[in-house]
Length: 546
Image (cartoon, rainbow, N blue to C red; front, top):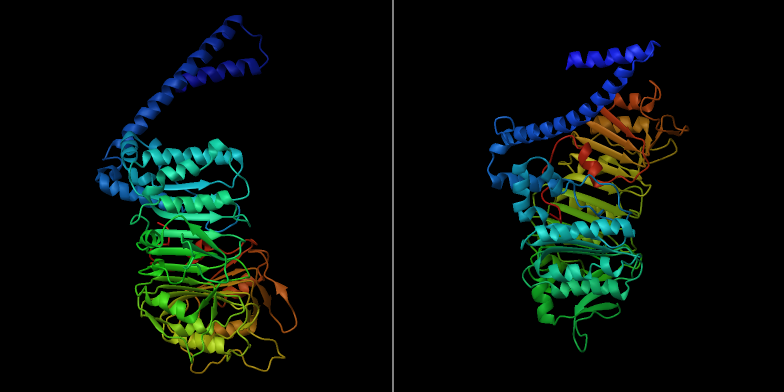
């Protein structure tokens, strides 16, 4: 082959030198080009055969020595690691690194056989009815292929509907009616501000066709619609709470409760079963949230009853308005299995009631708190006092706190969080100006505990005070996004881009923390970013969707 390549190069050199062309040489060139095209095709066939042989050879590819059952588990983990095709929020669909099982079909014939015969790999079905016609066609075709290849296995069905309505041949109605009896996990999202009749039909029709005892995970998110209740059919609508709209599902109360009773993971946003429903019993994960300013109301006794009905609750996300009934204080509920607590108290209700009614166990707890204000910058408000009490009886190792522009008092926080390893602060002020009277950092009686990770987002950092804070609470890794640094008491500076200057803030902060990273994008910080910045892997268990 080397001599053949040299001969071809010699012909090219002959023509480039300006020598007179030889007629016989031209015909030879044409003949050789035809041969090369044929050789290329044969070479490609040979490479495919050799690659497949290599991929199937256990000596060259040790993974193929594993039993089929283990391979299926590996493939399931690989396909689920990229997450769902649809975002978990209402933003437009992003390009996501999602791995589908059909990508594994092209590796080798043995993998192809395993993937084709493993129905469980095809059970997560995403269907977006809010996209453009072209993309919706591709999504719909893929969904039908997945349904066919999943056999009779239980399904995880994620349906999103929105402003754009599909044509008849792309309508998901027939598809979800055919698979409803097999749905084990159902996620429904409406990204329109209105719940049209066909949208209601998509939701209520799917639930009505689902077999009782099959559904174990249910997620309903309704965007922009006034909060409402989901109730079974009744001539008198006796189960519908007063003062709120409700949607009626074509099931009797007994059928409705039988359908929801096996659910262990329940995520609801602006559409809820009645607070007395059995849907809230025996849960492992529960999310009661709202994306509207007119949040639905739940009394403290109703919330207590719901929490007590699920003593094994592991994940609790809450963002509704709580009204206190006329008595001294809410009843405390013991949740020994709680490992994630997410409180969105951005409305007009006092969050201290929620802090008072929950008694976590001793398991490591991840906590996220977003509150409009703590009612005072000295951390002596009722909200802060109840949070401090909650923290003292918990084992919080990871905290995500939004302070909405208030000052962060490290001595107060760290004194009640001795187990804290990772801290994310948003929209906070670290330190103080010279005119402040209250001292921000107290060096006495504060535990010297090292943070593995500190993430600051949209914060103002007073450099001198931050240096003092780091002496009390040293940090292994510091990540900043959208922050501003005050080096002197009257100079405000933006954090420069990484590497802008050897005298930039990154170099200064590196003298305080061993590892410093500055994020220059303006995008919203996501949970996935948190995971990527963690210095030590901490097992966080399964998410609400497999």
